[in-house]
Length: 268
Image (cartoon, rainbow, N blue to C red; front, side, top):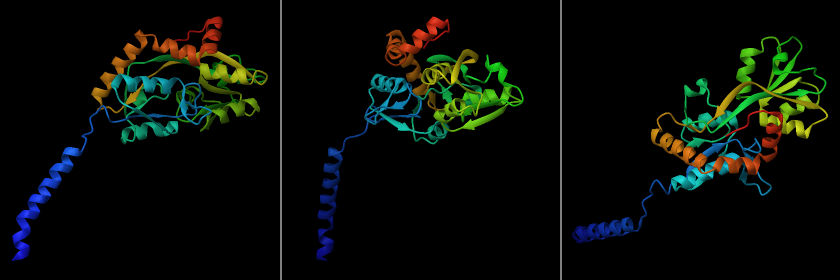
């Protein structure tokens, strides 16, 4: 009987305790939730790791500016390029900002923002390959390196029926194939082709005339219509305020000058 008699008092004490704990709990608002951005930090100067071991580059600054516009902290997840879309679809990340090309095949699974950069697909050729244009690749005996999961791989599959296409995981591995003479060329974006030629001027030639142009955009889940609207509004505002010009001058000054001298369009 004594235990039964204390039950109302115990219940009252428990109710008070729950009320007190609940009052002290801070509810998480959307602004407190980090914006998780996926990118492959192996593509300088767009996505890279600096000397201090921290994310750096064009896309990193762009992601942080997006977070500021949304009043949300940003957390960057370093994910191999081929794993970015699966990570997005499973909710591991909120958006992808990783020099990703907007293409019909990808739009079957994900959504893209308005484009923020237009670039061409070009060729880093071996000095002794005899190549004068990327269109010279489709011949028996030719070997061309591409990076797995990129538009270069898609283009090679569609257009190079006679050449051998060497698919590699890493950009550095593809460049090495050309430098060592094991591949006649490496298909990649114009800026990277120019950069790798500057690093290997004796062994390579930069054939910058594009075989196709493509646009980079922010990737989101198809059902994230609110996020898409916010990202597009941010990109428009960021461009109008000169944000892309500042990124170009910070990370791509030499490339911009070289492209202008060669008469090759270069623009965000």
